[in-house]
Image (cartoon, rainbow, N blue to C red; front, top):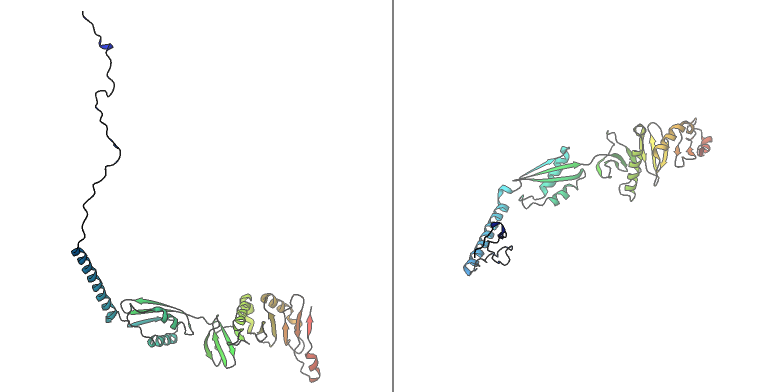
Length: 294
């Protein structure tokens, strides 16, 4: 008995049917590395490390002792930069009084404090210039006013530091302050009032001022050039009060001359002034009368 076969009817092989699959556990995980051999630290290794550390320490100590004792690093030159030669020479004397020594060990803070005790020094910047020099840059105080004192005059800066005590006032075109005592408790308050007054006035007004007077407590007064009239301004509105005085100045003058004083502390509703004394004795009583201008 024979059978016919048709190739079309044969079962087609399934994809991958001829491949052999093998089961593998954790196929996607990386393989663990084998641990390396551990080095055993023996006594001879410890001894070598100890000797190496001692050698490094000893070499560093020798280098340090050489650096702090060598003459190459000893400060020999001090350069002082200042605008006034007299101040430079005085500061150089202060530096000589203090030992400088090695530039590596030199502490600049004490020298800075010493230099700033000088009346003209506002700030001192010190730099080390290797191998053996110092460079000192001085910021000097700026003269701000002439201060009249019982023993003469003094040149002061904005902080009230006395820069130069002098028997006579110099030629510098600076404001003149009177009625301020440097040792009084209200010295700083009066100085602040003086600077506030000058800052509020215009340049034209300041050019007319002969001096500022603070003999009255807590009150700024001034005298103009060419007149003995005392103008009392108080503590505020300095520019407004001076403008009012310039407008009403003619009303405060009499036949005997300018007023003895003009009080502008109540300038919003009145001006108080005292006429100058009359030359005749019989009219002396009338000169002490106070008038008001509405």
